[in-house]
Amino acid sequence: MIRDYQAIAKTWFLKGKQRIIPTYGKHHGVKLLGVLNYETGHIYCTEEEKYDAQIFLEFLKKILQVYSTGKIVMVLDNARIHHAKLLQPFLQEHKDRLEFAFLPPYSPQLNLIEGLWGWLKSDVLYNVFYSTVNDIRTAVEGFISNINESPQQIINRLCVRM
Image 1 (cartoon, one colour):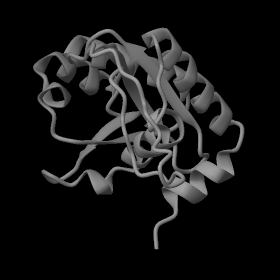
Image 2 (spheres, rainbow, N blue to C red):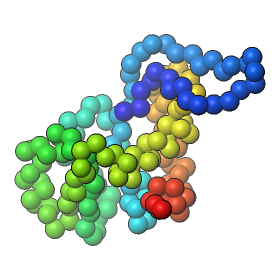
Image 3 (cartoon, one colour):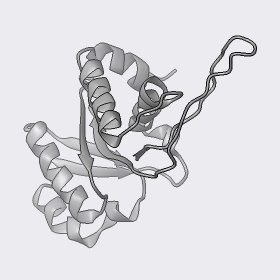
């Protein structure tokens, strides 16, 4: 969830010239679902109004279209919607192409996509005022489009761990 209230992050400024980030106190935002292909560096994201099991199922269908060949292993946290009964027939039908690998509780650092969300926030959201959700949406779409042009940068930043 990329919220429209502004994220203040570490920054520097001249003494006496503190940066002021306005806000308007609303709590709307942009909800993103995304996958990162750690072999190719490709990122696929969609924006959704809400996030529930039905939306996740539709997202899975899109993933199978975007990555039309080969086995897909999705690394997921243990959110309830990732275990929903609604998904089971679909997962059974596509068991030869789609598999879930669940992370241990409280371990987001093991999920590469979390690095993408941090990168997105630091480059697009921190210390910036967007007057509308559409402005946020445009900035997020531009960021994803821009980094998808440099898949090796994505791999180097998100997929290579020491």
